[in-house]
Image 1: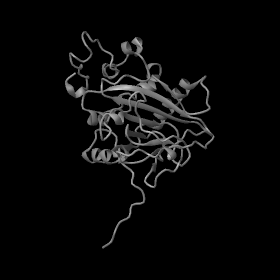
Image 2 (image 1 turned 60 degrees about the horizontal axis):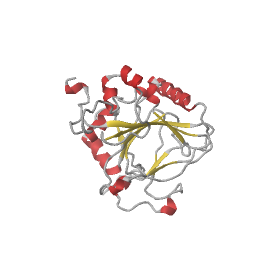
Image 3 (image 1 turned 180 degrees about the vertical axis):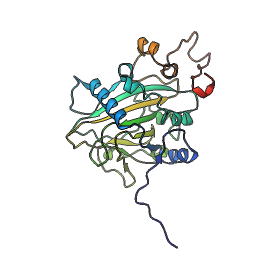
Image 4 (image 1 turned 90 degrees about the vertical axis):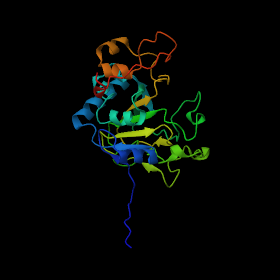
Length: 271
């Protein structure tokens, strides 16, 4: 019997609504990779916006800045990108918000290796239940070339969101920690969508250019926002109804959520 060998397993998905096969991959790996989400022009426009956000900030180590969507239209447009938001909705249903939006730079010739799960140091998500529940769903837009190693790539351990055993402490600052780890090699315009419980780390950036990513983190509506105490009222006034709803900013006339959660005006909900 002939056996077909696959050199590398990559959970590739297509832009747009999540298929049953893509949902299966996400549940197995804890992440999917969506190629060709942004055109070259969109990549360049968004990259310039992220660079403006980081102007005046030191470039010595990995640095993330929040709520860039309030001032940069190119970043705002990614909040509800049609290639990604339907997949977020497939995983969460119709009740979720944008908990944070982080513009991240890994400077040229720097490293910030540190394997971790996303969560809260105040009360770690893995304390909530086993397996770690989906409390933060991160859509990471790659804005610079990461098609080769040591470009600040994301390193992932597929399926680790299901593991009751954490990565040993002595390995968490190492680049190579497991034979099953996966280093994401992708071109600009690619989106990595992943579960907060997946163990991951940035790879060193040994190149002579800075690595930029734009991260959008979606969560249940009751999770406290992490990149802002409140959303700029001027932004809420001028943005679209859907994006305004995804900010989670609305009137609460009584105890929070006692009166329910306002419906998000998705187009297919009759709004």
